[in-house]
Image 1 (spheres, rainbow, N blue to C red):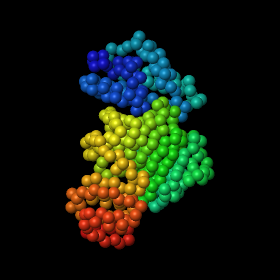
Image 2: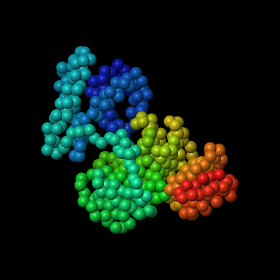
Image 3: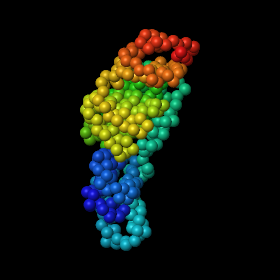
Image 4: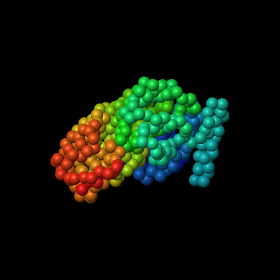
Length: 391
């Protein structure tokens, strides 16, 4: 593959059938490993490869999508015309590429003008920005549907998204008017609260305290995507023709059908992905990918990644109201307790070096939990209103 692309010009990449098809697949988070291999084998051509990728994927179609096969057929027709009039200078070549892209958009718009609109799709960056801006003054779990509907949810409620887009909370249907075929739903779970959610594809998500989630009322035909800031445990319904992607800060997790936990709080400086069963692919910056096996923990901290075998129970027992700890520093424990009990815990820097082993029941009061910890690692504390000071 390296020799094939040596000396390729920009338009040569775009005219190459294999490259065109691969670039379209990569835009859907498919064939990432194949794309990474292409970049590694062609280091001198990376800039042209990335420019060609942007041109090929600069055409997006909303709602009723045109298949890649149709786009490829139309592109090949234009390419054959262009080949017979190929320019000899870079200026003319670039002009030809831009003109061809414009013609392709025009042809597709003409063919489907009564059915579709052409515009840039809502991309990952846009929705991650929405996730970053999501805020709630309420102490209750809130679901925001579309741009207006705000629904209050009880703690530990069971939420289910039906195939028709309707929402069921604790077996009670929420009556609301659907304003669009597909709406983005925002779920805000404040500190001190938890909930669980069943998506309309059958996948189930347990949502921990202090977590924000975005998911669509209906998944697209080719891909299932959600966005998260916080901690969730997922049991993903298998569908090989419809990969499931979890987008978060700094990385994406791609699965077909599996169970795993992801911890990615914005205020923390690390992200963990722990695989319980099946197989997942962790993708950083849309390029570097790592495949995990059961019991693997992918840890990303300050841009540095590592993969280690772990006891997965320690990472998922929060679903059962248990905090299992192994050589966990007290400052991390205090931060997790603060999030779970929705209380501010103040402590000194020396607690960052003290490690704790044990199991805590998060169903007990904060006073009982702190008392259990203090039996092993002695400390005293004072409590005033919603603030605890560790002495």
